[in-house]
Length: 216
Image (tube, rainbow, N blue to C red; front, side):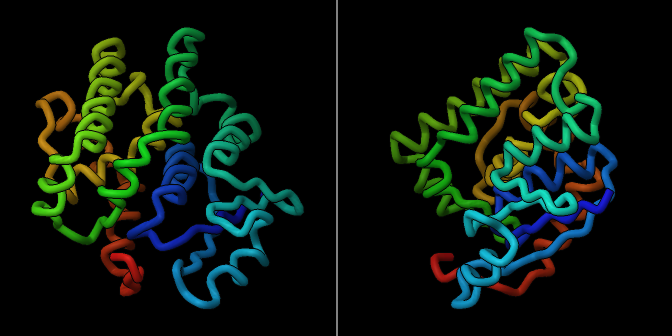
């Protein structure tokens, strides 16, 4: 096995965090190539390593797998023996549904509450939550978490860590950055995610980065 994951800035790249975290939790060894985003050379550098010119992209020998969900699905099937999805078929369908919802939606949260781990932006968060579309999406995420945790009883969305937790991990960092108020059970879940050793390593690396995106 010679796995390499191409990622963007750890402070900003929510798409990169998802497969990185899933792979670390699954115990997979892999190298990483970090390409700083939003630089003149970024597009050329990524195109040398990723067919669609975006991160993340997984290299497994000659194979290239791009898109965060495709990478998670691949490593789950190839290397994790299916452990990254719930074993129960009903729970697995539920998990896939909320992952697909996150993968394709929540445009307002992405735009107005972008991932920025090393910052504390309470005022910006308060202003963003005054917008109806942002507030509605945040409420939807709260409902997703509440429903999953109510059924599983935690500590993760479906009991054991799954791809669903990997996909909502960037949201956990966003809620911390923008000081989004959480119900006690959801705050405990967020602390569970942030307490994971791989997550702590990612956050530490993000805080050590010096690059600043132009729109930050």
